[in-house]
Image 1 (cartoon, rainbow, N blue to C red):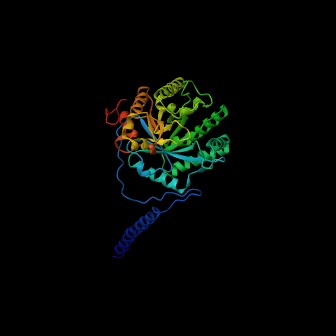
Image 2: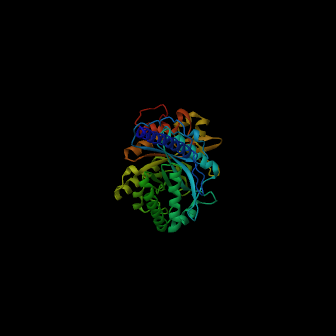
Image 3: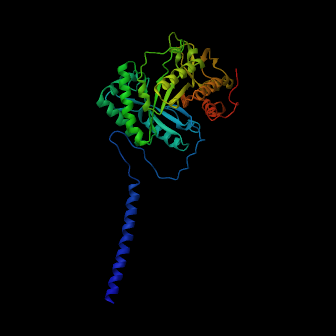
Length: 384
């Protein structure tokens, strides 16, 4: 009898102890889910557990449609549905290899864009560089100083990888405008190699925005911008900035980005990649979503402003508005350029920048997406 009682007590203690331990474990885990992870230099995003809608899967399409987005844009007004990649622009390098963002609002916008993009299965990449630096002047001097020294270069690589991981980004984009010597090209190649070595194992992408390397007037190669061709092996996407040709020689707004200019650029880069054995699918043809004034003292205007002024401007490449003549790419030209990219087996299209696009049926991004998806939809444009 005593043995039976003793055995019963052992059983009760065993199961009772396990039950109590389970409660304590569950309680501890619940507390851990609400822990805020902190970093020495950057505030972290706060993740609240909530039931989220499944991402809206995109139609299978091997080509990309990349949209650069400036850090002050409203995250609610970006066309995530049609874009495969949003490149948030810009993080700014310091000479000693640190990163700067344009205030708390930039970080807030980055997080909002990342959250919204995930709902559409759209990737978010952080761009570093750009033309102007947050501390004044061109970004070139800061960028070169950071990547020319092995210690600061390593620090910059680690900062970028850490930020990409911390903010759940899909990769990094390099916009070093522009390497101007063989020495610059060597530093950029080393930086790209080291960055790729850490991003690739983590399943993250590395892209680069490159100067067109082709003179918009003569069609000849521009030698003042220098790359090491072998460097392009490290990139998933090489985004061709096939615009701003109006600065090649004497200013001429008509040379912003005509079709002939893009055709010469595609030919140059396709031949370069063929010669070095790189896939043309790495190449992404960029187009402008802004209009260039014939008077350089006047500001550019957005594609959205052109359409708001007159929806018929969607069919044109030149318009007189407010006493000024502007040059841009209307839908017919954008369609022709997209077909050029497809015919030459490029990896897709890029727009600078997505925040300049018109909303609704006259959206340039929507039209380009339709062409990439082989949709025969002529609602958005007509021949001139």
